[in-house]
Length: 112
Image (cartoon, rainbow, N blue to C red; front, side, top):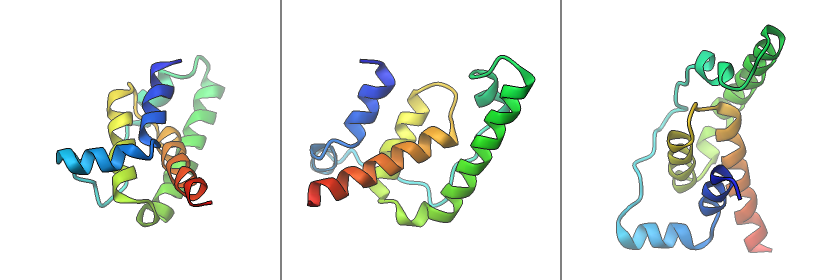
């Protein structure tokens, strides 16, 4: 399993928040969407000018969605997903949004 996927799965693990709380390891969570360098993010993912432009458009859409929905995501999920982004190489709004959406979906799934 790729490292990113195993890190992402640990983010949505139901035991993770309880373990982090009991160990006092919860990260302080930013109140605002982080600022990423899209040039760095997209350059590491693309090989042509057209794909770079497409990457930037995808990243901007994800950033805009994060701006709109940031307050709706659980603080613990934000902290976990921000840590995954920090540890995973070039940061990406698309990956951050995906991580947060998966964590929220996992919580809904657990309730059902």
